[in-house]
Every structure is written in structure tokens, then in C-alpha cells.
Image (cartoon, rainbow, N blue to C red; front, side, top):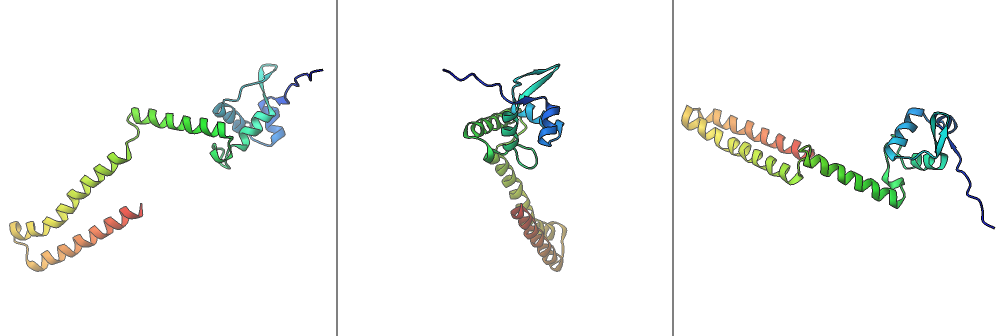
Amino acid sequence: MTKAKQKPLAGSLRQLSEALGEDRSTLARLVKEVEIEPVGRSGAHPTYAVRDLVAALRATGDDGAPDPSKMSPFARAAHYRGERDRQRLAADAGELIPVDDVHDQYSAIMKIVARTFDTLPDLLERDVGLPAAAVARLERALDAARTELHRQLVAE
């Protein structure tokens, strides 16, 4: 004798929000993000399996965002696959820049700044006739600026 398949415990978002003590809008967002399929209808409203909603709630962090460390291996793989696809689309649309390109651009900019810091005192002394004491003061100020710039870039 085979066991009849039991209908899952289900309810509308309003009913489940009251039962679980969660905000209805949070559950609605979760249903949409995780793509939980309704198991039926109650009047004009879809009903969702309690086990699906509870599993989705368990897979989120305190902020309500998906937490891969709390997901099943299959859901985690799907999550990362989706993130990878999202990043690929953003890169194709020009919204993301590869990190190597950013490093190359920063490097080129910093070389120009360093060359300017190195040559400015000599240029001002030779072309403008800046006195030696002023050149020495300028070199100290540029060295301090270079040190501060380096400190801030390394801190980030």
C-alpha cells in the first residue's frame, strides 16, 4: 500500500507573515528574489509552502540579504553562478572595470605626479629664479605631500 502524497502546509503571505512574525513586505521580497513558486491559491492570493519560505528565511542574513554560508550546496552554486552572470553583464555594459585596468591607470597617474614632484623644484629654480631656500622649502613640502599621498593610498 502506497502512502498518499500529503499536501504541504501552506498559506498566503499575510497568513505566513503573521505566523512567522515577519513583515509581509520582507516575505514578498524574499519570494520574488528566491523565486519561490506558489503551491496553490486561496481566493485571489497565491499560497506558498511553509517549508519553502522557512528555508529561504534561514538562507538569509540578519539584513535580509542572501547569505551563501547558510544555503544548501545547490542553492549556493546557483547564487554564485547568478552573481558571476550579473558581474559579467555589468562588465559588458561598461559598469565594471577590470582591476588590472584600474591598477594600470592609477600607476600611470601616480608616475606623472611623482615626475612632477621630482622636477618642479628644479624647474622653478632654473626658469623662475627661485632662491635656494625657497627651493629647499618646496622640496620638503612636496616630500611631505608625497608621503601623505602614499599613506592614504596604502590605507585604502
